[in-house]
Image (tube, rainbow over all chains, first blue to last red; front, side):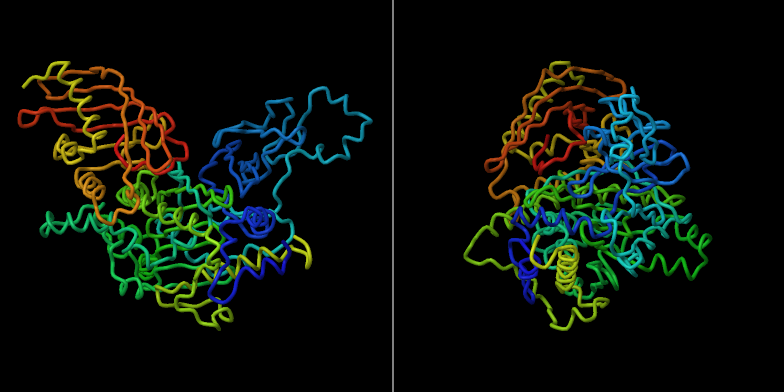
Length: 437
Length: 159
């Protein structure tokens, strides 16, 4: 497909179904979109000590994040320059002072540079020193550690970190500032949930405020039913506090508001959100006031942003301290990872709620997740219909909205989905020649 | 009532049968009021509250699950899932009549199916039981699956 064909996949308020179903387009996403954008790699608390590593991937690219001997976080391709073997295969570990490929014992410093090769004499006068293999593990050049959150852009040339994210970093800031020490730590392993649908469906659903009261009636509605019958006037258990707001009315979600930023980022919950009315953790507000002063503490805790999308495939919940990555595996296959964080210095009750939210809402065993997965996979199958080939994202569409990417809307708009698709096109075609893929 | 080893083992087998026969309200009644059903996310996980689990549910949440499974608008259960437990003979880990606490250990294979897709899980169930009101009740059921940390598809019934 060429640039013009990619651009023809959208028309005002509509997206062609091929963006969800075509493996060719998926492969182009790997080649362009997932190289040209800044992608979340991991959190530096996962690798606190020198020699610690975390193996991951961006799209189909195997990567290795490591804490180098100078204390900085380094990112390199997890691919031995010799025969291609992945140098580490477990997700987490400590490699000591160097990585050693298990195949032929080539070794590399923790920044990826070549340390030693057995029988090195065998490479003398072979031209080896001019080969790409002699450089070691290929580093990713564009890495940015933003307050512990490590991002990378695989393309050597492209948009800067600051220009790419702009004011959307305010959501990450708010999540981090909720720690009295301004610091987060990853807690435990992520939930891993396999979906047989396109990754973009999951991303779109994060700002889809017209589905909770419908798709989740069976879970949140049942909790409401049971709680209404049994509870009386007692305080709500934490689990009930977490799940009941999913049954909020359309008016609630309309009033919640959606904000969009440039480059496909945006968030729900501008004015209030389903996270606004949680019980306070004893002692927490006092800690925050002591750390930040009263006005600033109030400002930090007054934000209740719901879901913030960091385009293309990451979502965070500031008030819950969770992060979800929608990892594309194929046009119809997506692995969802749901991570949680501790607010360093804050009461354990907040982490307890975070962990509870994660398992109740995001687990493969979640009654909320079950119905979401059902909807995505029905859509993935339904989109194969040739009778109608366009997907509608027209709710509250305004033909001038593209002129003003930073805006606040009624909370039931699909403007953020359209914002994502504008960014999708931008970062898909920016490295495509006029007449070739 | 002082349960015998046979009564403890029979209880575990009966519990699995109630799930397999989709007799969920009866299954729910096997739990004490403070009963908990726990599926850790990590291998050898000890922390219950301050890290993620696959499941950690009290009776209110379990009741929600049971009621939801029969709901009119429970879309992920149209059509309904079916499941089957294959249990090893439950082993009695401890009997404490004085403390009213009985622990069992039961390796299992579990199959859950819906449409053409079947999920097979293998693991170990650890039950902590007490006699309450003359009958054995589940205080805690901990289920560790051998691939707890793998990517999973929907697991909708009770392992």
